[in-house]
Length: 640
Ligand code: ATP
Image (cartoon, rainbow, N blue to C red; front, side):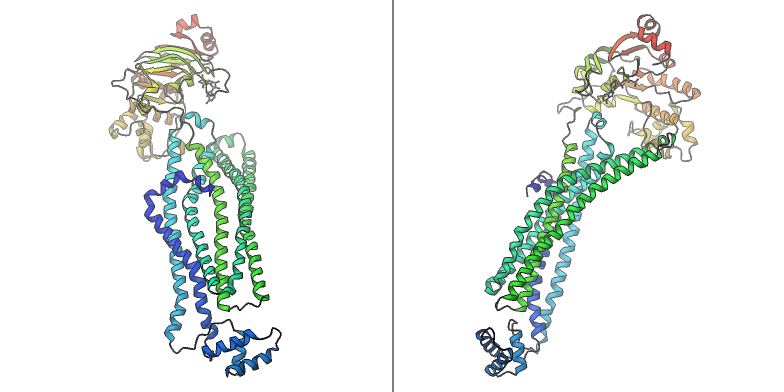
């Protein structure tokens, strides 16, 4: 039950569906009563009809016969007993024999009234019908609630993934996150809905059957011995606990490995060209094969423990039943067949829920392993968080950026900060080219402006406002980003351009595409702007993708523009056309441009030279050639 407490905070998810859930529970209870109480009762009522319908003795004759049989010496010759019973009751020898053999059967006088027979017989299909309908609606309504809960759990995890900072994903395995979203959310849903339902239904079935057992035992003391069979119940607890413990560990391993398999597969499918180009097919097969075989090993471990519980419980309860049959057979108890069968059925109905509770315990253990994995995401700190009192950015935005003694470190393990003591002002309307050797910190500088990360020390101000005090959306709306390798969504060209400003009109999108020199290729596509670009835009060339990214920037028309060598994927003719358009786009904006080619530098008003996390020099090309040895070296080697 402690395990169930782990899920307590999530029961609120059921609140909107409480009526359906309670209806499911009610059906479950009906099912429990029909199974645990209804069946044994119906059997008890039906059996005498089957066995006693041809009897031709009265109640008095039966009681007189029973009295003679009860007082008979244990080893009396059966033939002599038959004679004595026949003589004492006035019955024929054959009938006396029937009475001796079936002494325990309740006498039901042969009735001419078929309606009694009919009514008794009808109890069986009626119980089956109630049980079947209640069982169906219990499962169906529970599944309905389950789907709704799953939708919410998955929604919560996905929503959290949207809020987590970029840094979170750099330390995570993508396949593992997908597995948490799909597999783990499903298991947690099972625990919240299906297990909760079973935890009410199964004990109730147990209690219903138990109350029938107690009733039969109290009304006829001879049946009391069967209650000893219930001693098997605590004996089942031990394997349930032991297997549950084993299963928790295996389940965690299995879920983690499921993430690894997804990761290997998604990485492979995302790098089809690289795999072919570097002839990695065989090593990829091996990598996938070994991930899958490890997964199967853990899965077998889980199956082993999960499925071994049921036979163990069956063995224990079977032994208890055998014990009961032995006691019944060897004792001189005055047992009746209808009650014994009914008792055994009730015992079976007691054991069934125990078996199911064992299975539920296993599901709970697996669910907890999944919940741990989901909560790792749900409780992950949002390092770049919007303050509760974050303020909107006052309009109009000028686009002045000020770095005040900014230092930054990706993680504490990094010995040296990636950016150190950056102190500079970038004036509105100017274009700044960021140059420097690889790893000098240019992309990190841009990442801080986008607030993908917050500085470890110092602050960054936009128009005099600390970025950390602003609403995140407000800040990012002021920035248009054209990355070196733009990512497109698997949607139409129109939708892909529109995402930079979803409220733009169609004409504005067409104009933006025109400005980015993308109209020609779009118009040549069979479906024009409605052409689907494929997964991550694979149906388009690198240059076409970049033009769409530039069209997005034209459409957004924000005061800050970040270009990561935006025209690098274009051919020289397109590049010169786009350069002209970029010049228009850059007018009046603060532009940060990571330059990878010297040709691009002529667009810049000022060049910032990055060196080991610092801006070691700034100025125009001519002055830097004089003053900055690193810039001169880069220029000579044509390496930016
Ligand atoms: P390039 O011109 O090659 O793109 P850059 O000047 O843009 O290089 P950055 O990408 O800013 O350099 O990287 C600066 C340093 O920070 C490098 O040493 C890099 O290894 C490190 N770094 C970059 N991203 C991360 C990260 N997510 N986690 C840890 N370290 C990182």
